[in-house]
Image 1 (tube, rainbow, N blue to C red):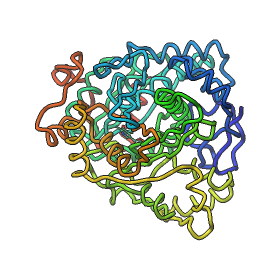
Image 2 (image 1 turned 120 degrees about the horizontal axis):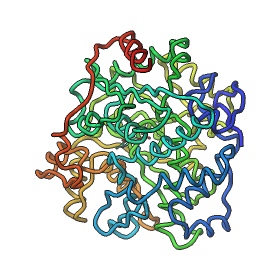
Image 3 (image 1 turned 135 degrees about the vertical axis):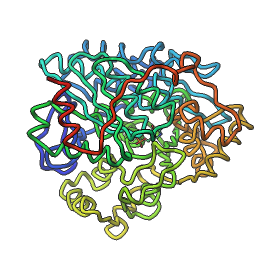
Length: 476
Ligand SMILES: *Cc1c(COP(=O)(O)O)cnc(C)c1O
């Protein structure tokens, strides 16, 4: 299995070769040369599997340059009940991503029972173990540099803490994350984790990361790595739970299931698309956005129009506040019949601040063949959905999941199971829950007092040279 770029001008590489990098040299994103296929007999065999065996069944078809026995060990060490332990009453942590039935044909898929209470743990924990394995094999080290507004940074740090050969340098906007998110990250005392609070906003942090990445000499000399949402290792980890969710709510492979996905960078729902391409009987993939509705606009009109950071809203579902959807190119590559030249042409406009319209050239008519539909929510919609879900089902959900559930309820076919991906637990976004329900959401007891733990971080000006100097000092 080789991986190729969506822009068609980079050499095909193996999984381990693309794992540590980001974009392909031609600026594209990696995808497998072809999607492995699961037929009816395969699905039947997978139906009864536990999460770890299911993950191996899926991932071993996408990763062929890590010996199967080693891959199995990595997976078994990643998906353990004691790592994904923040279950709701009645759920079994052994399921890793248990479902929660709200009513007939309406379910939540709990993806946020891991250490940082958001679905990003599902992929990042695997990445941590894969990185450690691949680095040990080649005797390399990596210094991961990232920017976060909250969820990505904490998931990355909890996945990489204490790992050999890996250091994490995470930039976050000083005093702009929630108290809980700040405490989660800054209370880590591991000496391979470096929290840097930048005097600025999230975009400033991202600009500093970009500036370092564009300094090719520095990047090479300091083995700078990334774990952002385009990382292929993250995507494949996310494919697994679509299978798990499908089997949990069906009795036979003849049934179809729809998934509703609170979306920002299109990473999570892209994994659903890949699961579908691999043969999972998915009916609809519901793309749910917040006020930053660049994806909803595309799936309704055929126009993809990234907004630019100045036109990005700060919402009560902050982990979906994006100006462009980094993984969207992967779907467009498939939509155009894997036409790298076409993708290059479309993104030459996008990369220069423009937009494209797929209505005129007929591509947009084919979007429905891939099952995509979309909708969006605003702050008031999310608060209402949180209140209704509490009143009707006795379940507290967070603002991101509320976005998914709101759109799912609008678009669902009552005869087809609808699985809403729960992308964060409410404890992570307390303020919005207090606003909606007037009460503080329950939090896992081990996290009580988190905000009182000693914090370890450095404050830095918005200055790319300063972060380079910092990395140089810390890695000497
Ligand atoms: C990252 C995140 C999302 C968006 O996921 P994408 O893969 O970027 O589409 C949604 N909800 C939460 C809680 C997140 O952390």
